[in-house]
Image (cartoon, rainbow, N blue to C red; front, side, top):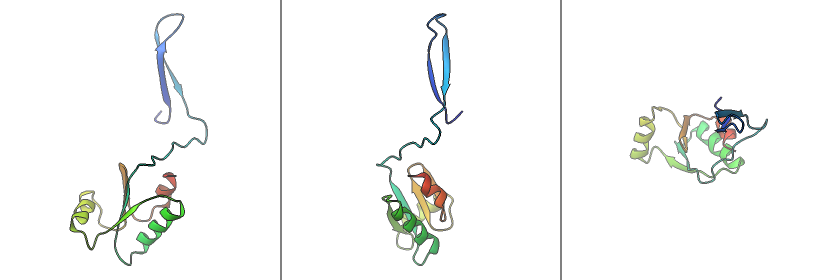
Length: 108
């Protein structure tokens, strides 16, 4: 039901409230919020970090990179999210660690 939209209103004949569940069209993908901030927390010489930033660039997704070896506050943020490896990607309310092409593709 999470992919269904709900429309509610009174039934014209009986006056009772009815709910109608409408599924989005097959293949529907919600538009990515163009204002969503994407941050890649990275480390130098990190193969998965490089793969992540290249995949974002290839899809035309804007992002910023923060080097965890140069920013202690950023390291605290990453550890606070429960991660112990780089890269850590924070995209709006979503976040993950490692190279995740599935997550990156879902953003477009």
